[in-house]
Amino acid sequence: MKDNRSRLLWRCRRGIREMDIVLQEFLNQSYDMLNDADKSSFSQLLNEADLDILNWIMEKDEPRNDGLKNIITLIRQSRKIN
Image 1 (tube, helix red, strand yellow):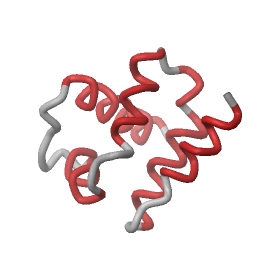
Image 2 (image 1 turned 90 degrees about the vertical axis):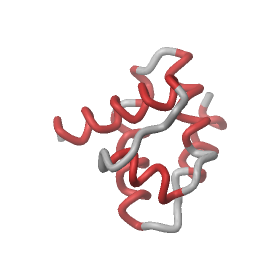
Image 3 (image 1 turned 120 degrees about the horizontal axis):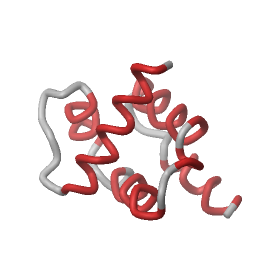
């Protein structure tokens, strides 16, 4: 499990510094509480383009995939709590 977390942390490093912060904070603060489906969606999210993820988080657009919609919602909610 630790190995997977290290890989996810590495994959959270993006070309946009703000994205690094958002994704790494979510991984560190919320990932362990996710169910398996949401963990899989988070991993899938990291395959997406930076600008798509940024637009989804900023609510300028939304992903078509329901799993990605859900994980984006969770990321947005975690940002409002912090």
